[in-house]
Image (cartoon, rainbow, N blue to C red; front, side):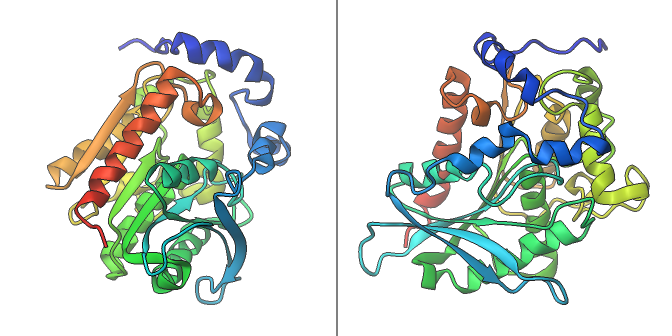
Length: 328
């Protein structure tokens, strides 16, 4: 096995070049604060998240986990809806390696999907970040926000029977973990889980993690920084909870249908492929896409690239099929 990294898609590589100064690999713990202030992260906060007035947006504080602070939800409802029609709900979990981001980060992606679906409510959850708040704080915040959303879906104009978990990167890992928690705690059912290049495995020891060391957007060093922040000395050990690292789950049966995608030229490639394979081996339903030459988060950073458009089309197609049999 070679440790040479697979090549980036030429169009993506050209777009990545001017972004390198803001997205250098090799994030270490002493760089977390600077990364939180990085202009590449701030760009997400400057977007028009009403999507030119298509959505009415509000912040709402809802009860957090027992004994913990309230959780902030960013709620986006279509401005024009037909009276009495309840819409699907996309419950979104932002990325950021467990250490970065807010509930505004990357929410333009599910909002675009909601528009293309012909209307959906988007609820983006803010969770406490590591290392200040290690596991289980982040996932318990996401779970608490989902419980509130399910209970109040009708109030938001949504259909509690058509909630889809969605997340990117760390948010994809947290969404996968919440799907496990809902199964194990017998929580409210969700229709599916949309996991974009999810962060699943704290062991950080797959061939792709070694291939991409020092290369791309989120490399092996950065990944170790994120997992160490979340788990401390437990990272890589025998007793890591599947609610922290879903790849640790011994049983993936009984989960809602999953969509997983990942780039071929990124750290998470092999853990995502293995997770999808294990869902199939457990008798579950999963759709997997490995985008050739895609680096981590390529569709968010370079949305106009041909590969990014193909990835978004695949996500939309999966959602349309998922929702087709569950119309109100």
